[in-house]
Image (cartoon, rainbow, N blue to C red; front, side, top):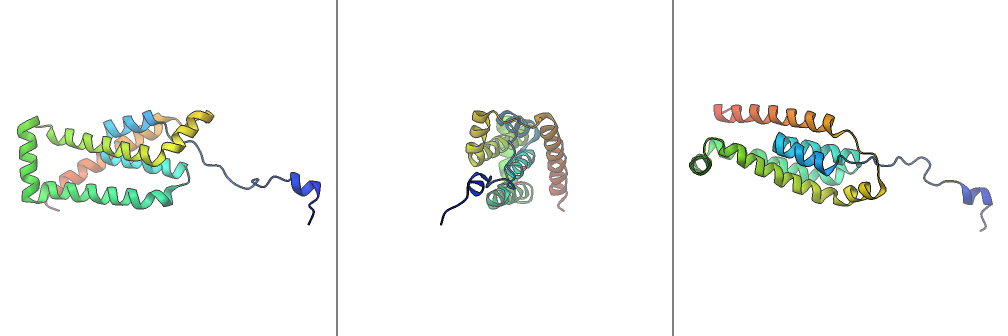
Length: 159
């Protein structure tokens, strides 16, 4: 079967919508560091949506979110969590939980980098225009901090 010249020269990807560039690694890191674990997960979810790969990332991010929530609940509602809080406060002082949550957030950043490493490197290599990191990073950071403080208050109150 022979094809005409017009059929051969017709673009085959005309209707396909290309994925957009993810937020930069720096934006993701700063959001995780200053915003906490929930902000880190939020910016990773935004990157997944921008890259059109939220469905494959959903199970991983869902397990991470559920694990973090279970950890925070255990930290405030169990004897083990009370002992861990007391131990950390004896070592690092009153801000021990803040430091712990910051370490967890940086771990989430590493997970996000591992999930989107190829896309991050491709965006850098091609020179794709990245979205403004200030808008997404600050929004995720403030939202993450608000939810984290509210969740900690509810956990302390025993709700």
